[in-house]
Amino acid sequence: MSTAGSNEQDALMAEMEITSLKEEIATLRQEIEDLRTEADLDACHVAGLSAQIQALIAESEACPNKAAHPLIERVEYVNSRTGQTMLKTRALPLYREAFDAEARKLGIADPEQFRS
Image 1 (cartoon, one colour):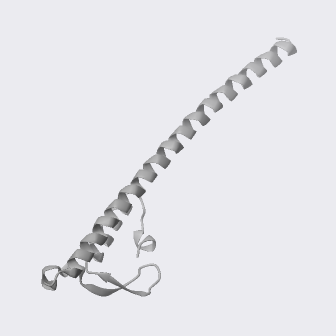
Image 2 (cartoon, rainbow, N blue to C red):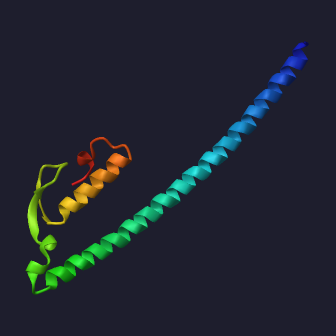
Image 3 (cartoon, rainbow, N blue to C red):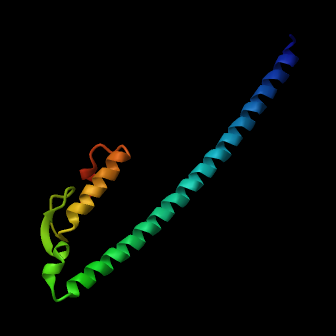
């Protein structure tokens, strides 16, 4: 085979590889955009749930029958990351349990280092 033919073949293969890489980049960009959208929607869901929880806590705290709402009683806990004492509702263990379970499901071996 001549050198010119070999150069043309090399150029054609390089062009095919470039085209393939451009397609892969476009696919990856779309995947990133989809993941960003999913993360944004998750953040919106968290914001909605947080608003509901805050409203439920406020309503429970305003109730004259405090014994009817034991999960909203404020008690001291230790922040897992900082070691500092914090005042939270008795519902905090529910949060921690759910956080840790989801983290483990996602492959996070030591979720305690990431939550309060």
